[in-house]
Length: 105
Image 1 (spheres, rainbow, N blue to C red):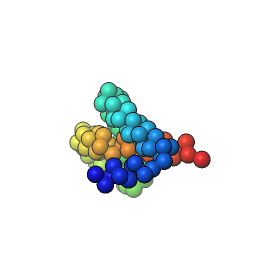
Image 2: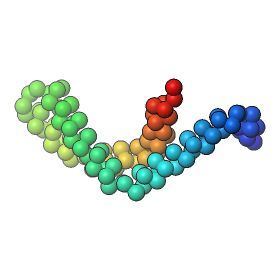
Image 3: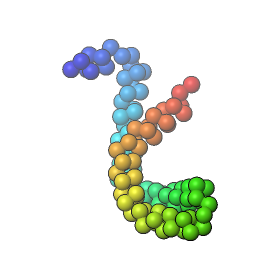
Image 4: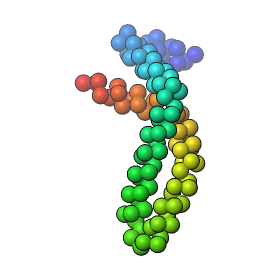
């Protein structure tokens, strides 16, 4: 109830911005639902390059390097599942805030 009092005291422009932010969040959530496979493929690509680069940079010894790359490949499905569901919860608001930041002067 206090939230409604606060919103009613805001100017029309601020109310419109809050409403638009809610709309953008809903649209991004909808996009993530429809494009689940695409997002998972993006996560896979980022995981592949990130894990390769990390192992190459941190572990110079060849035998350790190869072993860790195999472990990284085996852990990929778990990482993808966790990253997708975590991202699904947090990404819409982060993306919306980033987009709103880009249009503010």
